[in-house]
Length: 432
Image (cartoon, rainbow, N blue to C red; front, side, top):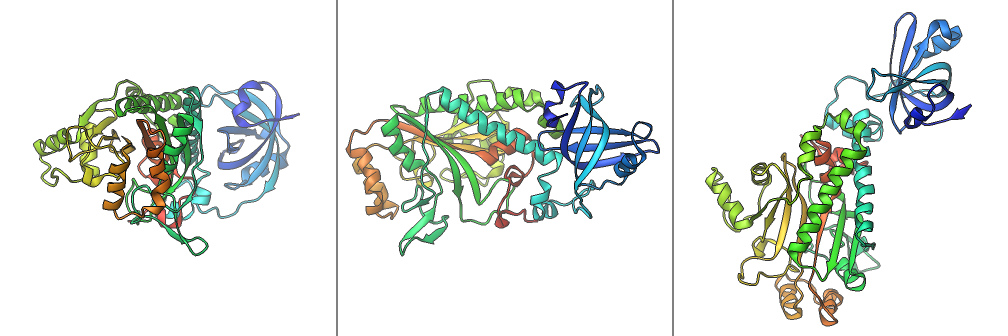
């Protein structure tokens, strides 16, 4: 008898197999017990018919409790009534580990309660679907960048210098010296791009600010490509191609997950249509003012309501170009004809999910960068290596960062970004 996983049921129709699983739910009548089984790959139903099994097997099936782990033996058969398409006719059950008083029952629970039990909430069909989409985005990310000749480079997580100042960084004592948990690997990726041409990193980043919204996390994962010999417009093309590739990969490979989450595939298909619209920061402010937003002035950063309105005006991801210099990082290239803006862009996702990508063309003039480092009160010594990149064969280069969890939240169509993180930290809990 072969041991299989539920996801492989289609290859074993008519065969008697053995499956290790957990009881996700159960219902029974006088003559049949229906077991909802999960094994980490998929969910399907086990049917226990009283007349077809020994009495002790049927009584065991009726008494199984939620999240009890079992060995199930039986015959795989097609089931046209279920979206999964297969079920198992159970002939044998062996209990591996009992479960009593499982705290997350099929009834409704508040988000606070569920986040407190995140280690168990991951077992639910909804969370399973979200993690499948997250996994597909990660898989597709490597495929996209590998297919486009990018080299994967891993920047440090503990850093002495920072990309955007120290106000929202976790500081730590590193052998009697200050060090910070990384807020971005970007500066290091610039060094790597000048060695390898096109590179990307994929790792954890941190923000030391209390997280009380559905969009923000303290610890999250970032994908950060950096490209030598590339100007901003070319970078925007890479960004939209990458995002469209992620959307199409989810559509192609996460069918069951999208069903569980009831995500509208026709909506997602729109997000594969290129190019994405572009709007300047100036035009965005004007658009908001014309539509009754009196809480925004030129020079302000956009809040969630502003980003939502702008994105919904286009019904697709939209680039907002060239923000004011005063609200952006020191390393961005100044505009060639304006002193008040820099060459950068944020990609705003539709449906109220906000910014998923931030990027820019990088300043390459040594003296300008040194002036910006001083203006931002950064330690020149800590950035001497970064200035070296402008001393020795500098070239035009651009890059961007995509937040994984916020992208998962958007493509899965869920409300809270914490659901897109397998184990959000205690400080990342939902606040009422």
